[in-house]
Image 1 (cartoon, rainbow, N blue to C red):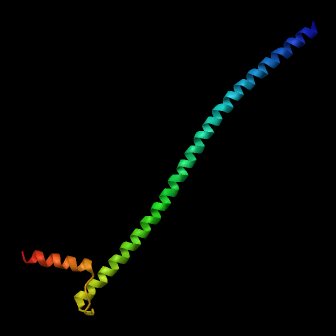
Image 2 (cartoon, rainbow, N blue to C red):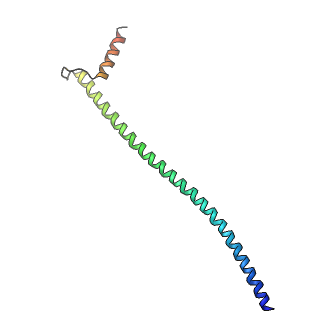
Image 3 (spheres, one colour):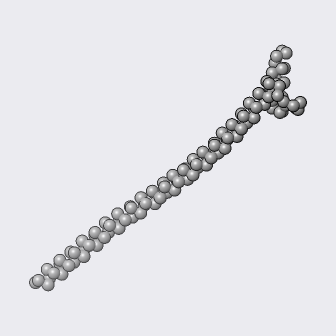
Length: 107
């Protein structure tokens, strides 16, 4: 009789362990799915960070170029105002602006 109860207990234990493993395998599958989703999110965020860094570099280069152009334009204007320039042609962009102002002044 004791053997019968031992076998029933062992069988019940095996069934419970199998159920527990089945529940754990479901949890592992959900965690794997969540991990894949989070991995994709991290990759997307890393790409966004790289794009933002590149955009900062591009904007810094653009700002530097604009500063250089503004300094060159200011130096040209100062030279014109003070008469401190050699007799050479004006830069084409400045000549166009001045010619446009002259044309509007005569209208």
